[in-house]
Figure 1 (cartoon, rainbow, N blue to C red):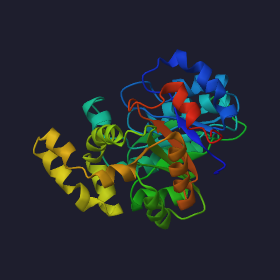
Figure 2 (figure 1 turned 120 degrees about the horizontal axis):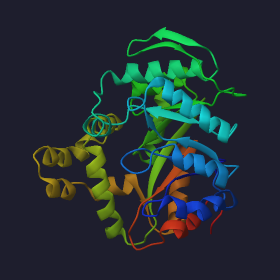
Figure 3 (figure 1 turned 120 degrees about the vertical axis):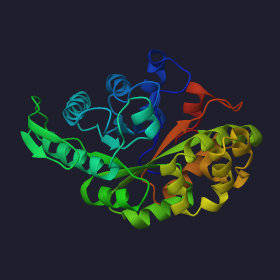
Figure 4 (figure 1 turned 135 degrees about the vertical axis):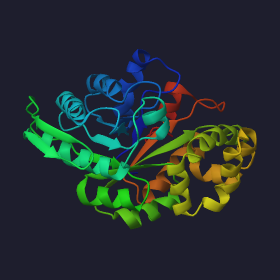
Length: 321
């Protein structure tokens, strides 16, 4: 087994305060990490603040915080706060996010994503050491910001990276990379660009059910929602899945949502969605590790008729069986 085994929190469909008991159990179950996201539910930092106290040995991180929806100084403040709550156990994950989140929901132009991530990374590197920063970056300027927080050690910073440019930036300047929506065989493609020296983290979508038809139905809905987004479409074109997903993308672009779902091949769903018995799911997650993934982060999908919620967390733990 890999030395790391992460879980996405909060769990879908449960109020955050109700998740304290299962989060307190995670370390005993064999989980080492808890990672959040930030779309249209909880923010990325609050669940981590709670988890820092509920599970005082877990490594914690957001996967990811958008670099557009908070100013650079506020990102530094929030990273420093979590680093104080979980000293030596917090990892700062940043990335571009998506046009829906950044522009449609927050009214902020998503411009020059590579440069904005690079500039934010460089700013955070300096700010989290306690240095006073005055700098004209290409995508923003900071005048005289200094954290009034003393950290024994700045937290590591990892970048969301899907394609060669961002992967190379992460390899050069960050402490690791976070990727998403890939099959075990794709890990080797990513590693070929990113290298093998630094941590590679990936969220893995898991539906622990032996009802393959139901798992594929759920998987198709997610795949259509995510992989029609241009950055993910380009990612899968690069990974060699462009032809298989072309009919879905064509139907989606024409406004035919049902047709888009129907045109996603079973083989694509089975590559990108882990499903089957809990034991089969754990074995499949291990395939990612054997292909070069450092840290799998389980994202438990709701539904499917198998174990759910806390029961699914226990069933998918690395020590279960």
